[in-house]
Length: 210
Image (tube, rainbow, N blue to C red):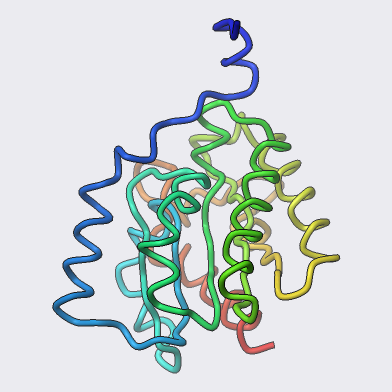
């Protein structure tokens, strides 16, 4: 028997089906205007969804943006058949894990969830390179920064020994004097503003070019 305490201690998993309408909307867009295969797929939670000018920030790439709501890492894995595999991307840039920690999942669980996604993608698309964007620091979730740092450490270590998987440090560019720079965030103190995304663009572009 699983107790409530046990569920809380390992972090409750939300039902991925809560995003069905969002995923169906992507599919409708694809039917109307099918993306080119072999592009660069940006996927994950609201930090991708709110990056509204992402195509302009990477003008030399065939960008596909598939960020949905406040999604978690397992949500992307669950919907891979519908929002990853059809595009046959050459590269995947993933941002997820932030909301997972906020919900109560441990750093170890976030790292395990990322490994599961990598294995699922590479089983179908072995040549696709996967870039993991570090769990970002934010003023509103700074109390969770120890878990974020640990998740980043574990995932960075995994990427170091895994072919076609790379960790991108988008944590450091958002810091100032040991804390998240509040001028890089929206009023909610969680999501990036234009300058925050400009910081991300610089380091992500370099990683993709390398």
